Amino acid sequence: MKKEVIFTERAPEAIGPYSQGIAMGDLIFTAGQIPLDPETGWLVEGDIIVQAKRVLSNVASVLEEAGSGLERILRLDVYMTDLGQFKAVNEYLSGVFTDDPPARVTVEVAGLPMGAEIEIAAIASR
Image (cartoon, rainbow, N blue to C red):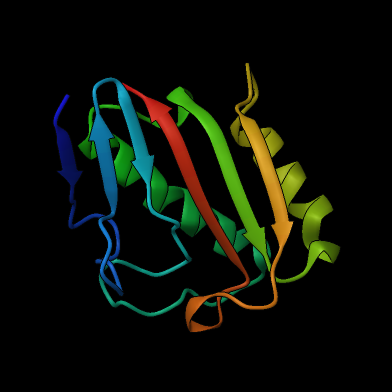
């Protein structure tokens, strides 16, 4: 199997030496996405839910470019700077993944790039 680099202008460009996504066979691995607006390159302003919506929009754009979508996510890795916001994020994600939700990891971290409060990476199928 050959590794395929995934790139879309509908998600933020990588801010380091990594790809927005990599596909190999039927699997797609997204880079961690923070709440950057792909048009401006700046973090969106707002609470954790506003940020989570932007993050999932970025993840969805990468997956769609690879021929997949949010409904095909197998595993979601969520990194947050404040697990005190876990309940709000959990409720939001429960509304997004209503049927057969993906496996998930949620971890509190000391910091995220550009001062983001949340970062999400996904593994999905085509």
